[in-house]
Length: 215
Image 1 (spheres, rainbow, N blue to C red):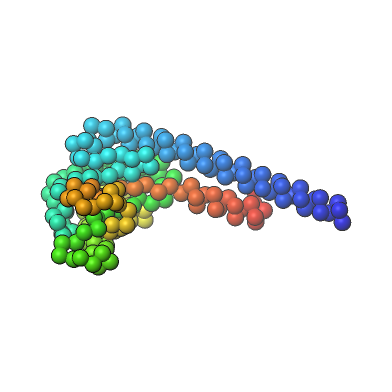
Image 2 (image 1 turned 120 degrees about the vertical axis):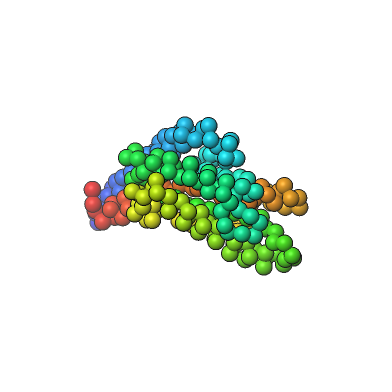
């Protein structure tokens, strides 16, 4: 009996070691992909970001900061200037992330819309949140529809439909939590293109394979 328990313990230890090794490998690959893609995005858009009043964040998110360029207050219609920016940005963005080096690592491209916590004429914070939620969702749908209809990304249409999503987040993720000033409110009004990799999915699949006894 003691010998049998020892065998089980050794098998369990071996299993845990394999899980740890494979998880470490996936994490390492993710960090390398993130670093490479971040550098590639910086190189591709280095001369454009300032002109667009946009920035590249450390998590590979590209943030468009100037709400006066994006949408009219209270409206989900893209302003002509933002359409022009998206027309110059999105085809190059798609070409980069769908290249052979990165395509298989991409799980989702999230177009995220963010608002301030304020709604003109609405003093109830919860009502303002829901009104801004509807607006942010409408805005991201407008942005999604516009970029997917660009003729220059037509050949990647199926991939984009399966990977690009519109996500209105209202005021749930503010940059500035103190919105007493108009400047602070404007800071929170933004559109972001955020890359989600499939690293966590890969780790889950590896764990399932190991439990099933697959190599």
